[in-house]
Image 1 (cartoon, helix red, strand yellow):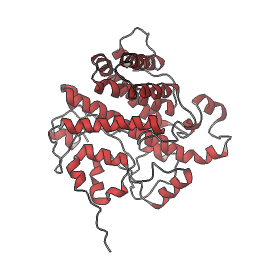
Image 2: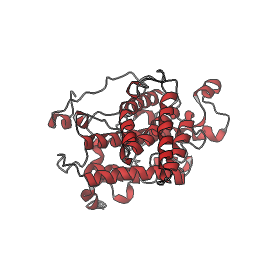
Image 3: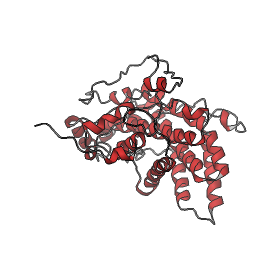
Image 4: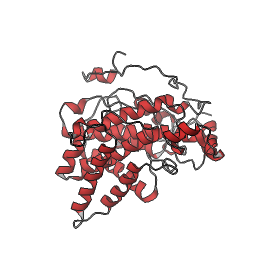
Length: 357
């Protein structure tokens, strides 16, 4: 405070969001996992406002954009969504995230993405029409403005949603936007550009809602209406025992979705140029330890969290991984974040640190 070093070096406006009263506090102890599982995930859902640097050199100075590398990063994100269609999960959509509740907006995104992946020249127009219609329907479903209003004026307000629904609409719009911005179709690109402020607003609402949620993991199991009726005392003992794990799954999914959505939009704006390209996109904490995201059960996840440091850290301090951990200790998502932040050459030089006797 009052502004970060990166913004000062680049003469950028650096505006921190106003602090809000909350029962959660940031976890500053990186060596131990919080004992209070039910509230710990929420404490890390506070975006930090610093520039999303692309290819930051070792000395902290920003290198020139490499269009080929940035395209590679965007293709990786698109492949992750293709992986979701094929296998039901990816580094930002956990296998258990939509296993019990699968919001309709994400069902639409899933089927639309499947159609897009398998499109050909004969059905391309039909697929593009489906994509455009599903995106517009998403905006209509989650906005409170008249249907004929301009897209840029849509959904700065919000209907009553729970945390899972907030995440689902962000991920659904991200799917449509990613396709539209990078497919090459002029009409889709124009529409997807207009979704940028919409997605940003939804991201803010998603994080704000999750940071204030009382029973975050409960929304994976039941809707807000059902939770109001039965409370968090779930009838299924298995679901009740899994609530700490579900809370982490949802909070980590929100954190990772925030980072990916910010990166997709920031990269596109960097390509396009203009004033928006230098705006502070913000950052978020995320878990870096190999195996934590892929834990097949609550018991395995709890065992990992009790035995090892899960590597929960801010994007701005992720360079610590190069000295504190080896490549085999870091998961796929964290490696992707490191590569886009520090470049492929730095990744190639990364070796496992020598442990002291």
